Image (cartoon, rainbow, N blue to C red; front, side):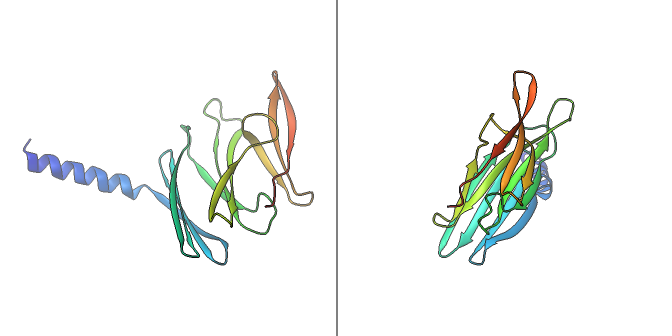
Length: 151
């Protein structure tokens, strides 16, 4: 194979890989536009507004498809996001990573549950302004209640 053919193959592969990237655009507040771009197990987060622009990559260790959820996870009136996937085992529970928008810094901060290492089967209780998830105490599933700071 000639060098020219090799370059052509690499370009085709690069372009087709880029075509699989999915983007979601939302506004956490009136001044900021956020673009979330999924490419395999990498999520690229770009935020622009008020003269500030920042981009970060988040690696998600999962074999299953990643899904995004836009919501107000800390109930401060500003949109946040979560990325989640079904567990890589038997696919019986969901694993969430929650990112809350911080207007003062113009970007997102990852949140941790009050118990356990990750948000499992996350439920947003808007009435009581709580995040409910599951953690395992030994082998026993237990309810975890998390209240995130609104600041």
